[in-house]
Structures are given as C-alpha cells and as structure tokens.
Image (cartoon, rainbow, N blue to C red):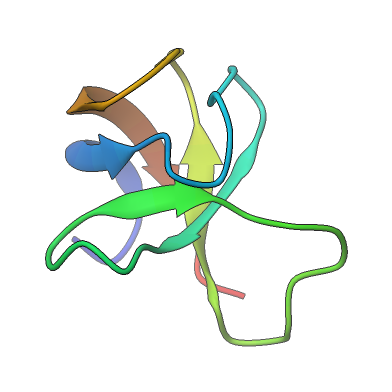
Length: 66
C-alpha cells in the first residue's frame, strides 16, 4: 500500500504499541515495531491504529511514509 489503512504484522520488541505510535521496521523480518524518540527521516512506515501489548500480532496501521 502507498497510503491508507492496512493490517500489518507488528512486534512489541521496542515496547508496547498504543494507538498513535509511529511504527518503523523491526528486526523480526516482515514486522513493524514502535519507533524510538525522534526516528530518522525515511524510517517511519506509519501510525498505529490499534494496540499490541506484547509478543507479535496483526494490527491496523495508517500508512504515511515520511
């Protein structure tokens, strides 16, 4: 997807994901994770629309490449 709401495989390896968190690529192949403070330009995939407290799972994300 280029823009829009899409399901994404997510990992809580960088902390629990809450709605509104920016997401970046995770070390787990094919997964996104919560971004740290001030993520580098070009690394943000989108914004989480659902929560993921631990482990891995499928959440909705608003794709918004920066």
